[in-house]
Structure formats: structure tokens, C-alpha cells
Length: 276
Image (tube, rainbow, N blue to C red; front, side):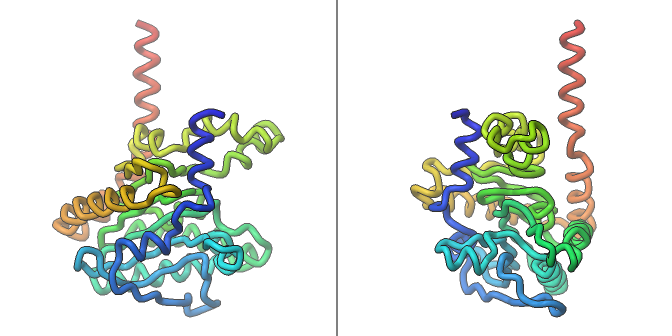
């Protein structure tokens, strides 16, 4: 078993803490807010207000659930369009009251069902990405387990992106990638290394800003990882809160505008080295 596939399995471990656990550990007086004011309340995305280190914040997270009943209730962390509508509503509220936003990403991807598509799944994701790009408060996103496709990116447009040490973030699942490339989903472990989806990969490409060390996997002992997360959040919030709204928006835009540039420059430099 290759090292990348081991990380995929750790990211998906049923014993790995879910977003609710992280919220309970780092946020005090959390009040969950419900509904998108149009269709309903998608429980795969939970959001609300609370305090981080005595600072009022808005938290938006993808929740997978722990028990079988919870997993069904939360649709295994796969949001419907109304989930993204709710996320946008809460982000706009955070902007109105000048609260920083913390998002927690943990999804295999947005729900691909017929009903979700009929209600405009792709449009909901696109609008969420567009709106987040212009929100005038600090946004920090945390990849807890899986960060799958546009379903993850829809709440991941941020000023700072953290990835837990054993999390993954990619355009689709290794199974989906193997199905497209080899017409064989059983080759998921083999193609996972090609996908460059680990926290270490994304940090090297300057997509992730920080790797949250776990010491032991979160599924075994969550304490160290959560403590490291708290330290990183305190550090970056102190910096981001000193910046004006225009700077936050501009830096967020440039962060995403530059994705792929570093990798291309590195590849080009390596090609020149070989020629020399």
C-alpha cells in the first residue's frame, strides 16, 4: 500500500472526528442557524455563530455524521443546492456584522442526485464561489478529512487554507479518477499518487497555506491536532483582522488567480535545468 493511499484511508476513517466535534472543541456558545429561506434546511451543511478565543465568528461546515442514522440525516456530508444557499446566506450575514468566517471542509463531493441537479447544483456551487470571492471579512478554510471537487471548493474560497496532516483535497475521488483514466475504479490506490492530493502536495504547490500537524491520526487522538489548529487560527486571525476589507478581497482573489502558476514555473525551471 503506497503512502498516499494510506492518507486517503486515514482521511476517510469512520473514527475520524467530524466537523461537529471540531466546532465543539474550538467554538464556545455555538448557535446553529437553519435553512436557506427558499427550499429548506440541508443538514449536510451546518452553520451558525459562536466565539473563537472570545472573538465572534461565523462557522460553516460540512458534516458527515457518526452513526448510521446520522450519516443518513447528513447525507454523508454531500450537500444539496440548498446547503450552499444556506452557506451564502450565513456568509452575507457575517459580512453585515463584520464577523470572520471559518469553514470546515469534509465531503466526498456535492450530492449528484437527480433532485439536486434539478434544483441547480452546478449553479449553486458557482454562485457560492463567486460570492465568497467578494466577501469583505477574513475567511479561513480547514480541510478536515476529504475535500472533494467543487462540493468542497464551494465553501473553500478563502484567505487562508489549512489542511490537517492526514487530509486530502482534489478535483474528484481516486475512484472517480481511476474510472475516467483506466475505466477501472479498483485502481484507485494506484492513481492516488498521480493525483497529488495530500496536504503535503498542496502545500508544496502553494495552494494550502498551513499543514495542521496531528502527531497521532485524529481517529486515534484528536487532542494534539485540535490544539495545533487553535494555535494556527489565533495566529492568522490576528494578522487578517488588521487588514482592511479591500485588501482581504484582493489577496483572496490573487491567491486563487495564482493557482497553477507556481507549478508551471517549477516545471519550466526543471526543464531548463535538464537542458543545461
